[in-house]
Image (cartoon, rainbow, N blue to C red):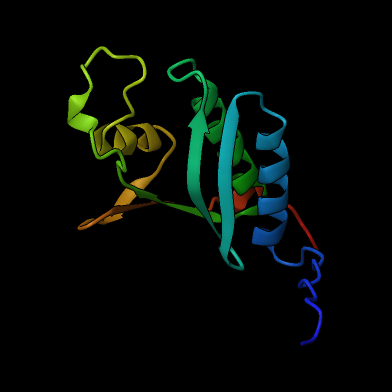
Length: 139
């Protein structure tokens, strides 16, 4: 059996590569914030997850604002899938600070940053168009 060879890290070459690199660095520097972000094309970045602890303190909102700002700098489109993965969502009281946001609340939250629903069904897919005017020159 041959030894395992990890895939070498490649240098960023597309606008989405640079955007993901900068988004990861920015959110990792934010205490209490966890974000999973991935490239989905040369000019498309997917937000797989944003979470903040403690909740409802503006940390996630600040992280999403920074992610959107970086997306604008590189002229990339942002997409996200909205799904409340909590099986016991109904068990929470409306005023419970630890209650995760509902799908409707998440759609509204992303909507404040220019995201719009592009498809719905089992999960809701939302997207924010690329804003070319502030795109960085990476060439």
